[in-house]
Image (cartoon, rainbow over all chains, first blue to last red; front, side):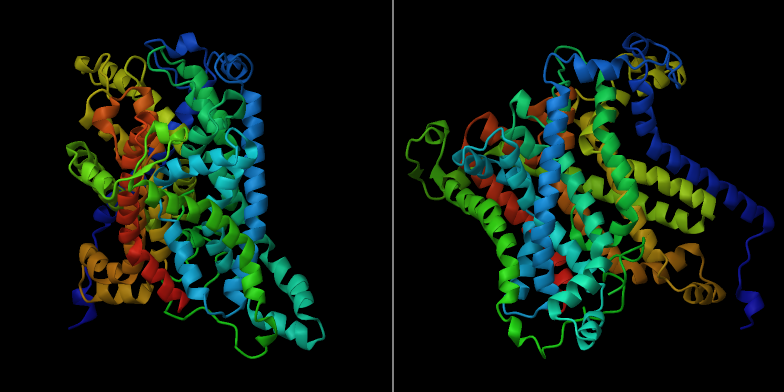
Length: 291
Length: 324
């Protein structure tokens, strides 16, 4: 069979229609992805009176910061600044501890062979499948028993355990990416084993550590269920639980303020996420934790 | 194993079954206890904060455990009574069925859209592809709670943009003051949009990364042999990316079955909790709402078993890559 006969070339018109459709589809995908984010920010800069009008404003033409000032300073329900502080402390503490612990464990499973290596890795994978909701009651009792309800430490401990499996699994991938031959070459050149590790391998791992750390931070920052149950007091709340206090179907929702609050909670995550995501996409599939 | 530093193929999913480089055995005897020492901190945390509560959960699920026990009364062993209660409670089956159907719908819609968008990205030029990527990244990055609240606002009864456009642009007067959340089916319609919107980017990016692994020569050869676009996709592309599709699907199933934040927040915005509970929210309401920790524990154990069972495939696959 001759090649020329069997190739089906689309006609020129067909191809042009095809490419117009492709561009249209791309724009639709973009619009659908961005619209809620745009609408959130757009609403957050409009006066509440305008938001509750029958006319849609696709641009904050009566630009105002009153919603942001309202949620940050004047909230009658739960104060913003303590919640921000709690969120930051919990997330940073979680990341700091989880990174160190996970890094050590990742070294163990990548650079050593030992008998319980396989069971350990399987455990790490299975643990990630256990939903937080199933553990709420017993974790609540545990933290209550330690008298750590409504504390930064208590919530951080739970988050460390939550992000640890994912962090170990992802770091394992990064450590595997650094060939052991590099270390061995350095050892032949006279460095000790630990020197070889710290001087050769560790610097190569730094970007991976940062990316994994940021992902742990985002998870701790976004976590909702444990925060809701373990830290319900206004002064102990984290930002997501604080944000929820604005949802009161009976009292009528102030959407403009709520959008300002949502934006405040989302901004740090979105910025961090955009910075590190390309590094993490590979690990995600193996890591099994949603960002 | 391939590098993870770019939006490359997901670890080990596509690359040719080369096992992870394992350190050679030689010269490792000196560090016989080192690996265990390195694991100690992680093991302590996981044992105390995951293992111990899990054990407590199992114990609690075979006990009569109500509010009295929380305040110190000794719990009574009741065998499998809690499980019997749960399994004979029609509400449990309702919630389970609802969760399964909801997760199934979300997974199917997410996978179809995700794969279509990945194929679309493959056809786009650099500028448009970057544009689409940025949009998807924004959606992916939104915290679930913020996302749910924003969608709640978009679908708001009185001032939401959806109702406004339906009434004023399309002239559908019946949507004036229409409540999207009060009716369960419509509640789950909105919930599906929220979940799919947040999940599609992950699927699209991962599948796209897989698509870039399909050799062009193979596709060209198929085209020369007269295979149309659909045939090329199902007979050439799909076999190449099947491992990725399988893993992404199973992850979506697990994530969608355990969804909590979105449902809980939507209920706070205006849904009827009794008619819209999914497994995660149901556990929360049975244990912390009604104070029946025994029954809550039994449901929790059942959900854990369900999810761990579902994930067996994923774990087996990952373990195989690890060449354990």
